[in-house]
Image (cartoon, rainbow, N blue to C red):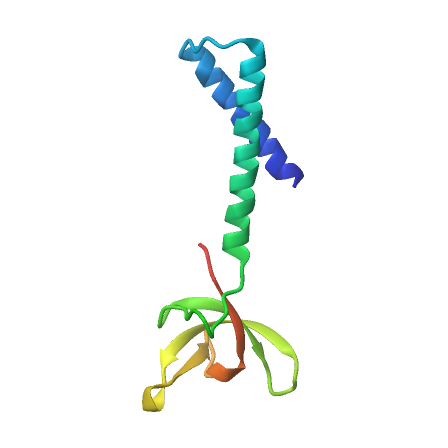
Length: 120
């Protein structure tokens, strides 16, 4: 959280400098309120972005695109949860399977607990 707050402070300073350069005329009290709102909005936006980028999607409600690598959390045959990079492929008889990237291993779609996009 410290990193987010530092980024928010830097952003608020940048907005302040931009306002001064543009000749925006405000009372000191209004400027402080405005910059506090900018800072809080920045922090809120960063938190929402982080939540979206790190959330696990429920495969019963939402499927990843076919052939796109995603991070999957699945229940293995040994009863343990595992995480792997895999892609969803159309399987036989209209179903689908997940193929673990870089291997010949597959995961039955019933064993997928969640999936997450890989950004970058």
